[in-house]
Length: 209
Image 1 (cartoon, one colour):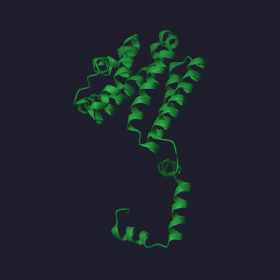
Image 2 (spheres, rainbow, N blue to C red; image 1 turned 90 degrees about the horizontal axis):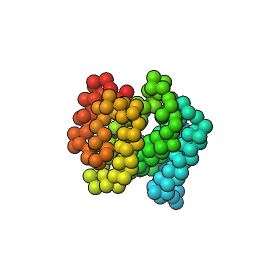
Image 3 (cartoon, rainbow, N blue to C red; image 1 turned 90 degrees about the vertical axis):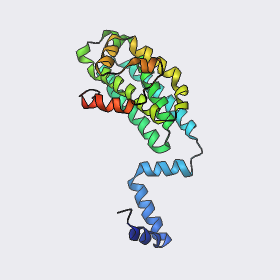
Image 4 (cartoon, helix red, strand yellow; image 1 turned 180 degrees about the vertical axis):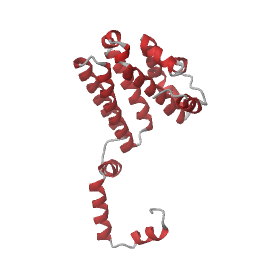
């Protein structure tokens, strides 16, 4: 409908007051759009400012639930909430760099701050957590691969840290191997050019769910 030339022309020919009414009505119904326009047109914060704010929010959230909860499945639920916040940030700001850096921060901080839970949880009761970590790690590789290769160096340190964190836990390492995630891609910061095809084939085989 919105590609219809006559429809576009009709909208353009509406009186200015009527256009304003339609815009306000639309913004009241779509808060994400309203927030996006506010960021683009009014907000004095830069994308980097918003990203730094998200880094603080993520660290505070992880510190809170890591100190108060030890169930890895529950922690996985909390991670999904953080993931939702990251997705919202990206939707509003179009921060492709932040989508990667913030997800790397989340995975590394969660693993590092939950070593006790990782070493004392029964595998059968923590499968969702282990799987979630590996699925997100694979997504990070796909996101990096979609950017210009020069950006890879910006994520080198955090990628190596993530690879080391996964390698240091027996169940995370086992889950990575089970889902065909080659940790050398992360540890050596060498993402295959055909990572997207590899990912599709793994998904088709019934893994990375």
